[in-house]
Image 1: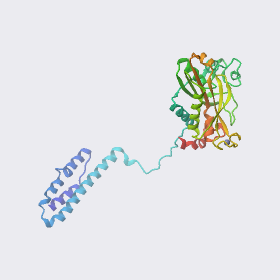
Image 2: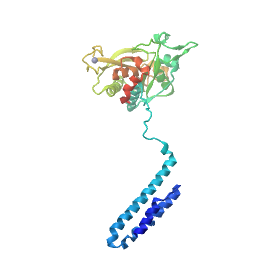
Image 3: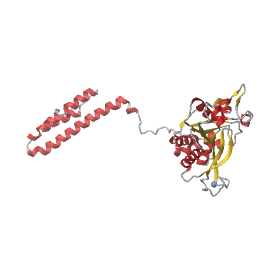
Image 4: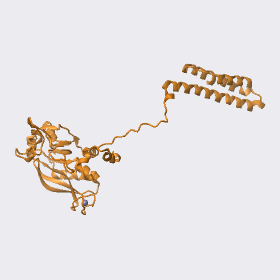
Length: 339
Ligand SMILES: [Zn+2]
């Protein structure tokens, strides 16, 4: 028995295989149920008691060695197949800079999420627009200053074509193709002919909202905006509405939120008023509903609009509007954790 084991040990040391099939044949020959080693194991009970210890150890050695040798041969194949032998897996990888979401997109997505949970769907429209959708359908008088070239980018050869100055043009496009109930938000980029400074830019981003149905009241508007303010700026946030004027809403209001730096006591950030302005809103002017094909005797609605830059400034205390478009990665990386 010992001689037989020694002979098999010699054999196992010298096995070679040039492909997976040969290797499998070797595995069957030595290690399978009906293999040579199992046959010896079966004979083990016939070994005289005084030899059992020595033979048992030798048999185990043979089995372990056979398993090792077959594993070695298999490894050799695997590394040949994949070429992994030439790969240095310990080598340091090239550093890859991970991008981050732009702060304006982070805040825009948050605004969309909050209104989405309240049932608003997203509406989109073109940035290059015609006068009708931007001004006329929104109840801007012929001589309204916003129509002046000082405020709006016009296309010289086509004075009717402009870069939209607000996303209200999307509201108009939604109303002209659908009937109430309408509940949409319109996020997008808008353009104004302004000198670039820390507080003004020639393009910025808005999210406007529009809700039209039967019996929509100013109270509904106030509740939706309070809900928004508390989700965006924290559950302690208070809101305040001040009368204002917009061509497309009547009555109109500007909304302030309580200053989250001083908690309403007054500080430099809120100019010692305890409040900071965040958006404009109001009940949709019946003239706007009629201009866009909606019966103002049956339906009422509210609208609101906010600047994404303004909300981002308030949330993250960014002082200079120009930071948003300079692509300075030192600034953009500050928002990694907000992604
Ligand atoms: Zn304050």
